[in-house]
Length: 228
Length: 228
Image (cartoon, rainbow over all chains, first blue to last red; front, side, top):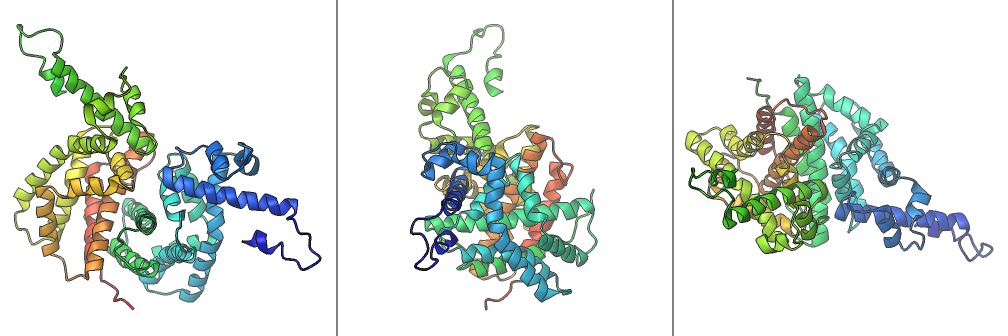
């Protein structure tokens, strides 16, 4: 709602929003609409034209005009959330510093996402959006790189890996996949259940995070069967 | 290829396939086409008409004629695979009988799926199909019930639960979700990578199963953080 706030400049401020206010309102509206449509139907099934229409834009090329390609649009949606997620992760890192407890580091992977989702209220679409884009053949790498390459995420991964037992490289990579898949799909499934009004095993995002951290510590520390 | 085999009835058999042979060939073709399209684009994005067209049916209502509703079509695809999966699970159950090793029971959840996928050669679509239908709001329950309600799966779940430490009901339910999500999405991700020719952490379905079983034993045995 920052676009609205910026209008409240006191009695002397113009009554109608400025052109750049309107531009940023339109961008916000397109991002929110695209996120919802992609979350519901998948990225492939939704055209830029459909996003423009659903966002109430009379110009069918509004998405292209404001964001460029679909890849650019998807990245813009990711970046709309990543600032809040990154800030939460930086805060947790400052708390745990060089903790010797693996749980703290797994927490630092999980909680920024669940806390961010909790902060958005209901309904959210971002968890399902991420589940959709990370199963898309070409967007998959783009989005995973974008979310993993942040400074706070890199520090978290380093801290976590430092505390792991020695793992064969293929197992470390496999468990990194599992770590991502479990967070993405448990969050997406919970988000979907909240939206549809169906049952969820846990009563809150906070409890969901606790369950995820418990399980992921289990995954990282699980004994490795030697290759036959 | 059973439709083809049934044609080979010796010298006296008719050269052109009988009407019921053609019917079952058409059904097979529609099932394979629908599975692939649903795997690639999601169930929502693909209409019965598109399936009929892609399966080369001149009649756009071929899907409806042979299978009824989309739900019926999805269930028919699941059942096309479940016989082989169920048979593998029954074989493993006969081997492990009342094994006291949790690993055997987790194996009995994981391996029937990975061995079935391995047996199909490349490319397969079934893992991605399952990932798509189990994220669909209404099909989700239908398909999960269908795959979980089999006799062999029920016996496996009983055997597995018998060996678990005491878990709060919400945690047991949550870990059941995780178990399913991890198998479904690790298999779907591997299948996608094989199809796209991108890297996979493990070199075979067999090794993928080993990694999944290791990790899932870790999930089931992970200590539970008490609720605050």
